[in-house]
Image (cartoon, rainbow, N blue to C red; front, side):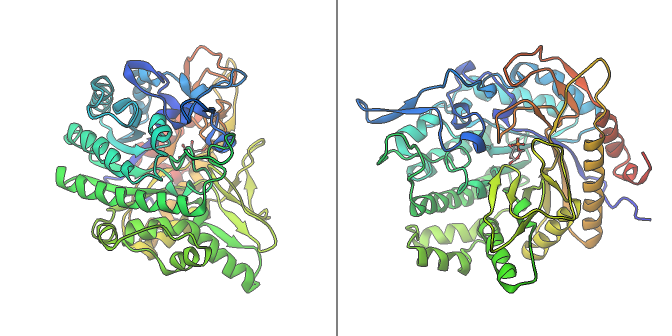
Length: 495
Ligand code: BG6
């Protein structure tokens, strides 16, 4: 029988993102960011709450009174983080991932001087994590680009964004250099094609149709943004090493799409699957190998969407590649040349896989633990670098009654996935940590709702914005605690 393969210093914990739980969206000087003007980046990320002002010739915020923007108050982590981190400490977390909300530090993204109150909040937050024995694992950008930066410049389609980003990064690297060792640059940046506004930080500031904030952006302008993001990624790696040579910095990709299988043995499906996977692996190929792969250069040439790039920029991308690959994994997909692929935050969906069960309705994401082992092996073969699982989890529709929530589906999901992580480690993959997504219920990124709960800790808040915000543990809380306490051995005990 397989035994735990997890190393002694394995990073066990959970992951969240500032915009999905902090709330306090305009408090202590914070400016609005991209997630503040959508109700779910997948659901209405192409139609942010912006309207064209014909006098200023700019987009401006125009919140929809008929929608509930749950991120504005989140789960009030901004004021309750001590209580929440207390739960994480009780489970034995030695690592906790969150993001710094860029617009807390530079409210419009355009200032020269950072907002001290924003910096102080993260000082206090990281101090508390450290006091509780948790390594802060920090994402620099998790769907939190300052909105005003997009309105004034278009965001990442503008080269000047590199400089503004570096100003932000410089400030936080210096401020937290004694507190943060693990950094990540852009969360799931391979979602930029699907969700250009919120995931990519792009806005069309010269729209042909004044009702379309992103829909008419050309492929070339999105590719240009990607190129600037790659330069920013490389310069961030460089700066990180200069400021703290002991720090570790990774790129972060949604790698559910990496587990895309061909529907048949027809070579058309097999080749199509490879090409589909390239659309995602391309991002880590550049940030980890330091070069644009030929398959993407060919596609861009043939589509006439090649971004402007000069040798000096390519040299920077080559010189500063990431230390490790951080990844999210939720599910796998099946590609068929006869069907189109659809997408959301969990990854791709093509043809139904008859061999897999799905999570309960209404989300019904396929559950494929072996797919995680497959992805870890694939990434190891391709990059030969440490891998950091920074998101994996299951969203369930749960309602707290008088008794503790018995979330067996979550317990099963974690067990099955961690058994496969264990297998991957035995295969030789250097997996440095596992951070479960959403250890406490947060606002869903994709659909902007509270109903989709991932937590080991329940939060009394609902889609209509009501609720007491009271926290209650679920059964999975104890289960995950036992896994951590036994460094994985508990996975092999019958429940
Ligand atoms: C990832 C994101 O794509 O998936 C998270 O990085 C997100 O922000 C997670 O919450 C789960 O997606 P969702 O839509 O169920 O919240």
